[in-house]
Structure formats: structure tokens, C-alpha cells
Amino acid sequence: MKDEKAPAQPEQAIVRTENLTVGYGGTPILKGVTFHVAEGEIVTILGGSGCGKSTLLKALIGLLPPLEGSVWVAGYNIAGPDRETALEAARKKIGVLFQSGALLGSFTLADNVALPLTEFTDLPGALIEEIVHTKLEAVGLADYAHYMPMELSGGMRKRAALARAMALDPQILFCDEPSAGLDPVTAAELDSLLLNLNEALGITMVVITHELASILTISRRSIMLDKEAKGIIAQGSPRDLMERSEDPKVRAFFHRNPELLHTAAKAASP
Ligand SMILES: Nc1ncnc2c1ncn2[C@@H]1O[C@H](COP(=O)(O)OP(=O)(O)OP(=O)(O)O)[C@@H](O)[C@H]1O
Image (tube, rainbow, N blue to C red):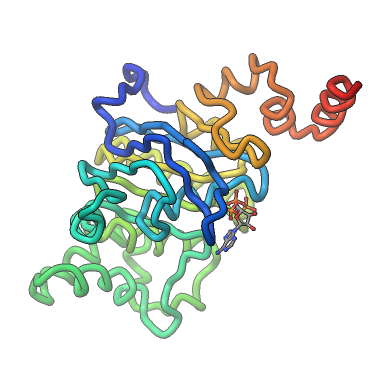
């Protein structure tokens, strides 16, 4: 479990949205979403399938321009009038671990991890090699630098993708369902790795996940989205949400019991 830090205040926020409305083709998926993530925090974003978790992530990393509202990432307003310049600067401060891992299959692990360094910096080759080695070492893959992605297990590929996301020493790491497709033990190892990186380097993390074990292990604060509400229906310590929330949707999620939803819906209908 994360250490006991003071609760996040908006003014310390390294990621912040205000009245964010985001969607596709002018149709909102999320409306008027306001939240913040403090520097050094790990926040998990939860919610049922299709509630807009990935859509929110796309807005936070600048892949989807908001329909309304603002998004501040690492001090840059990436939804303001100077969006392109802000995004270029913000992208140097963030790392993204996509659900698929998104490693290039025809590149070795070392070359995959080197990509952001060759693309975004003018560092000499020898230094890039050294950085790549350090990153692979941090995820326990130093001996696999010359392997191709297809020669690795799913868990190792995720760790390699994490090494690549860390290549530019990001202040903020965004992860889209990092444990998807991993067995529980491998998923727990990845959780430990994320926690270690957070604790050792102070990297802020915003993690989308459905995995209850991960949610409880890595985050002290969770934000739960809902499809019907098109926004946040609960936020707080995941343990409190699990043990104390009376919202049927929150209870159904944490107790893995869709019956709770049906019972609440029946009670609400005339
Ligand atoms: N590129 C797109 N164009 C149009 N609609 C989209 C697009 N991507 C997602 N959507 C829609 O937006 C809604 C939210 O999708 P999103 O992928 O953000 O949900 P999610 O909470 O991440 O779901 P899951 O947990 O299943 O991955 C869904 O109704 C989806 O169909």
C-alpha cells in the first residue's frame, strides 16, 4: 500500500481537469469532469466497460481534443489556445503504457526502449545505450536487450513497454489497463514494479484498471466513472469505497456482484 501522504490539493496537482467534456464526433462520452492528481500520487481510474476510461486517458495525453473544459498536465494547458506548443512540451514529461504494450515487433527490446530517446533527444548513441540498459535493468530485463518482443512472455513484454514509457524519465506515467491479459501472479509483479518506481523515483501515475487486487495494492485514491452519469460517481480511498460506499454501482463494482445493481434498479422503479 502507498505511504501516508497528505490528501491531494488541487494547487499541488500535476494533472488537473476542469469541467472537461470529451467525446467523439461532437457527442460527449464524459461531461463536466473535474479532478486532480497530486505530484507523486498513484490514482486509479475505475468503471464498467464503455464508461469512458480510455477516452479520458486520450484527453489527458492529448490524443483527443476536449469538446469543452481544460486539461493541465505537468504545468501545461493542453486544451488551451496554444494547444500544440503545450502538447509538445507536456509530451516530454509524460510516459504512456498502452494496454497492448505496443512494442514494435521488428525491433529488439533495446531498440524499442531507445525509440523515444532517438525521437525526442539529440543524445549521442553511447549515452542512449547506457540509458536503455538502465531502464531495462529497472524492469528486470537487462539480459534480454537483444531479444525480439515475440520471444518474450506477455508479462515481459509489458515490462519492456514500461521501460520504454520510462525512457525519457517522465514525471507522469499514464497506464491503460497494465495487467490486462496477465495471470494474477504476473499482474502482481507488475503492480510491485509500478509501486517501486513510484516510491523510488516519485513518478506520478494515473492507472486505468479493472483489477481489484491492483486497485487496492497500488492506489490510495480511485476515481470511478459511470456510463449513464457520463462522469465521476465516486472518488476516494479504494478501501473506503469498497467497505463504506452505499452507491449500488460502486458496491457492484467492488463486490463483483451485478445483482446489487439489479436490486437497486428494482427498488428505484415504481
Ligand atoms: N474512436 C471512437 N469513436 C467513436 N466512439 C468511440 C471511440 N472510441 C470509443 N468510443 C465510444 O466511447 C465510449 C467509451 O469508450 P472507452 O473505450 O473510453 O470506454 P472504457 O471505459 O475504456 O471501456 P473498456 O473498459 O471496455 O475498455 C464507448 O461507448 C465507445 O463505443
